[in-house]
Length: 324
Image 1 (cartoon, rainbow, N blue to C red):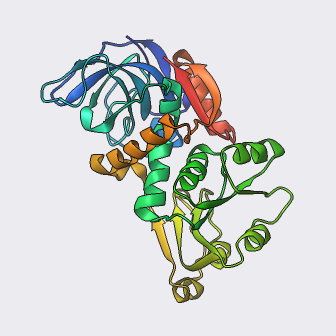
Image 2 (cartoon, rainbow, N blue to C red):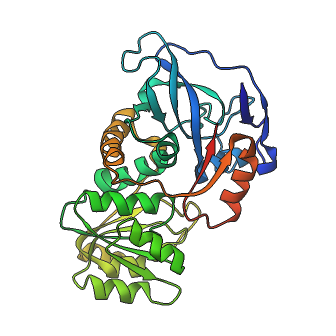
């Protein structure tokens, strides 16, 4: 089979494209013929060695995929040959990744793909959608009628947060840095968009939500906790999913006096059961057209190295999807 792979960690140029032996389907696994995969920042961290896992050699990067079941292993009764399927949380914690024509994946990490939802949409929405769902519902306990402020509503995760919060009945404020991204955030369903290149985020949020926001979702590497806590409503929640190496100051007094809470998490530590709850909602929303894929670039699997270069070099403003 054709695959994109590395034999040692390094820059994007470390990714090779060529022939590898196809995987054998083991007990509890499904063999998937991939049709689409997508790129996530965590994929580049693993490939570069920034996040160190013990990797198979050769190692195939990639967390997300969507395709068709070609075989099922012993003990699998949730899928059958011919089923359309998507998966995530691969290429992490030492698991082999998805950037190949065929992949063997533990069935517990796989989810049915509804009719009418294309493979590219499922691959693009996989990891970022599960991340957004975990943050909004497991950590943030968002409720209908509450107000969410998400920084960067056209990014990979941000676009999912905007749409899921709307699907849950929340009011959504988000930010964008260009007129194009402003328009895209509006198309995704944001009630209010603040162009941070011309307007103050803090002033804009206070004008739109004078009583404070119930949930503040931070996507920037260096959070501004003073600003965020000031913008939170009493008992507001803040969700963090970035800033691995940042050490910002934190306003302890205002935070606890307002009875706020702070939630940090990484998607790949969620259990299969937690991810299935996310996937069930995502499948409903994708089938209903409420969860759009925010695709910024479309490439071929043979262009995997270029896809990683784009992910690392650009403010992508969406997902990179590769056709297999």
